[in-house]
Amino acid sequence: MLSRIPIDLATIGRENIDKEILRVGIIAELDAINLYEQMAELATTDEMKAILLDIAKEEKTHVGEFQTMLLRYDEEQVKELEAGKKEVEEDILG
Image (cartoon, rainbow, N blue to C red; front, side, top):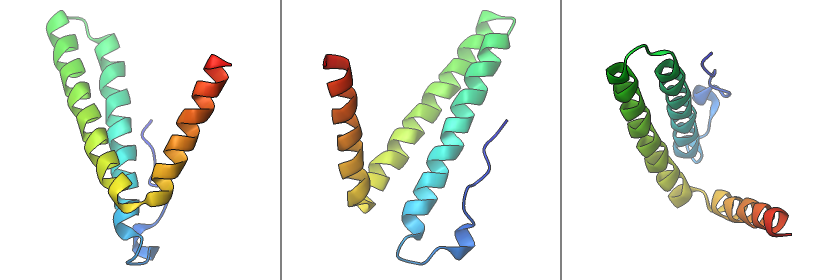
């Protein structure tokens, strides 16, 4: 099942539209990764599995591109990603 865009982009103000476009792009790419990896698991030939996994890998690159741009536009996102990373490291390391 593919995600629905959680927000009507037409209602977003000009000051936030680029950030929201990037977030929607990330959602779409994550959906594509899930779809291609799930199809790869179902594929009956190594050739088909390989191409689907290669395409999924390309989509992961796209996530990285969108995230890099989002981090340029959203300082709060940068801070919260770092906070999340720190929390996980504390939980894992004790």
